[in-house]
Length: 263
Image 1 (tube, rainbow, N blue to C red):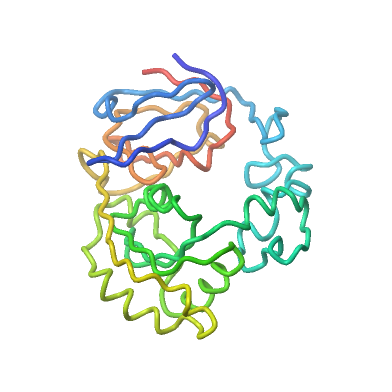
Image 2: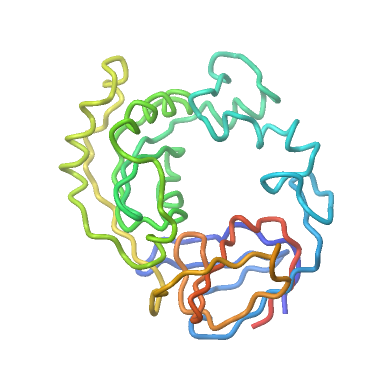
């Protein structure tokens, strides 16, 4: 039995991906629990990034104060083109924003529920692709900061989606794509002043997941409706746990929920 706040699952690249469930101070290797019955019981409390506990979050897994004041909840987190740290302009906490925003970022194509565009910090691409349930990924460009990656993404998402259909992603593996050819096609839409950041490396990363069988019909579970979530674990993909009764549990969206895990 393990108890504490739930955190985003930790992953390591392998074939298939190695998944670790993080709850409190515990790190549980999930791959070894495939085809095992597990139970989660929510205590009715949540813990915000500030360390305070509440009966529920205000919005997006933040308390009221953090939602309106913490840099982790600022507008540019969701719209990277609005980042201003590289311009010396503060949103909420300039020092935090400089550390988060002023570092090399990748713009990439991946295949999760189909082709999508996205951005992530350099050397974080594997984690990003795994969290999205992608089975393939390729880097298009490397830019010096988060704002420029956001500006490049804005142009590209006029031609290719920046969304993952999570239901489709959890229903099975998508059709394999020729990401090298697709990269050659879509870089034409990168603005001229950003073309210098296109990288020549055309390495395609392939990813597989520890799933014994995919659900036929998907029902999402949440602690807001069920204090106890349980079932036979049949797989892990993206940040989701898949159970044998066609139910799935989004671990990332339950970050901070103080729970007990039994297996």
